[in-house]
Every structure is written in structure tokens, then in C-alpha cells.
Image (cartoon, rainbow, N blue to C red; front, side, top):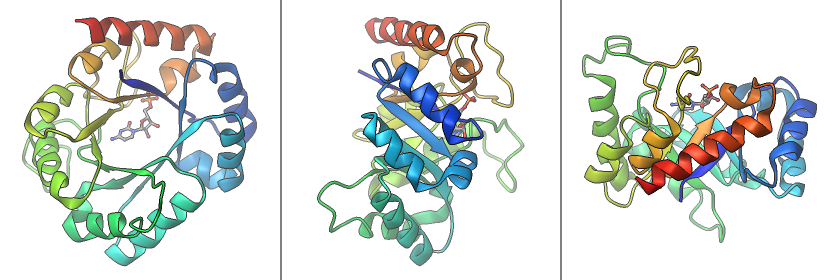
Length: 230
Ligand code: C5P
């Protein structure tokens, strides 16, 4: 069954921890991204862990292989259970990331970002392909680069799962019917993404900005369950 990941896109650790406390019994995974990690640092990850949370550290590494290898190892030491790097960093960068974790008994899962879900056709600098074709192109290569999974749109999950057996799919840009897309372009419903075979659904604003985050999360979990039955 697919896992819901709550994106803790809030500006300080107090907000993040109260959301995690409110939802810890129904949501296991929490995403700490650039803003929150920059402000709150590794101590927040330790506090989330004491609540029993699993941590997706979404820093989307993209640098030379040596630097990314060191950063991935550091992320593992501060408690990441899943982390991201850009597939566009290429084979040597992705392999360096995986090798940096080789001696760890319990290592985080490594996910490669394919085409950001905020991109639409023509917006990716220097890339003429449609974002979904480019996402599949990168996903196919990631399998041999030591990655556990890729980040792609829920609209692409079915195609990626079909063409890249064994590769996990993590999908942001999830919007329940009627929810505002915001800056996201390639959006999918929770049921649609799960129906396509997504393993993780990342949801931020539709839960974080809801009057009741708990009610919003419950609704999304229900939609995910229904998507899995289809
Ligand atoms: O608020 P929303 O549900 O759009 O949040 C989606 C989250 O997923 C954000 O934290 C964003 O950084 C993240 N994400 C994304 N697209 C990617 C990778 C991560 O939207 N390709």
C-alpha cells in the first residue's frame, strides 16, 4: 500500500512538530525540505524521530560526485530515511551517492528527481522533450545507477512502474479534486497516483493549509485507499 508523506513546508520547527504530533498516529512519513532544514537543522530531525516519524530529507542534491557522496552520507548520519538527488547529476554522481552509503547497515533510500512537477512542456532549460518523456528517460537510466526510486508526477507513475520494474515511485503534485494547484503543473489526484502504482505520495499545501490538517489528511488517505482498490 502506498504511503502518504506530509511535506512540512512551514517556516519553523514549532509548526512542524505540532503538525507531526497532530498526525503521527495516521501519517508515518514527513518531508523536511530546503526551507525548514535550513532554518531548523538536524535537531528537528531528532525530535521528529522521537515521535516515531520516518524522515524524507528533500534537499535535492546536485553537485560533483565527491560533494554529493559526502552530503548523502551526512544526511544519513542526521537521520534521513529517504533522500533526494537530481537524476540530471548523471551516472557518476548517482553512483557516488550510493557508494557513500555502502558500509551502512541501515541506509536511507535514494530517490532521483526526474522532471519537477512544476514544469510544463517548454519550460525546462535546454530540453525540448515533454516533461513526462524526459522523466521516463531519466527513470530508465536510474535503475542502473544505484537509485531505489524516482520522483515523478502521479500522471507518470503508471508508465514508470510499467517500464522500470523494481523502481519505486514518489509523487508530489498531488491534489484532491477541486484543490488549488498553486505552482504545480503536472498534478494528479491521490486515487489516480495510487492507481498508477505510486509508492509514496507527497502532499504539502492541501494538508498544511487546511482548516483541519487531520481531516484533510484523512480524506486523502481514504482517496488513496479507494485508488488502490480500482
Ligand atoms: O504543497 P505541495 O503539495 O505542492 O508540496 C509538494 C512538495 O513536494 C513540496 O515540498 C515540493 O518541494 C516537493 N517536490 C515537488 N516536486 C518534486 C520534488 C519535490 O513538488 N519533483
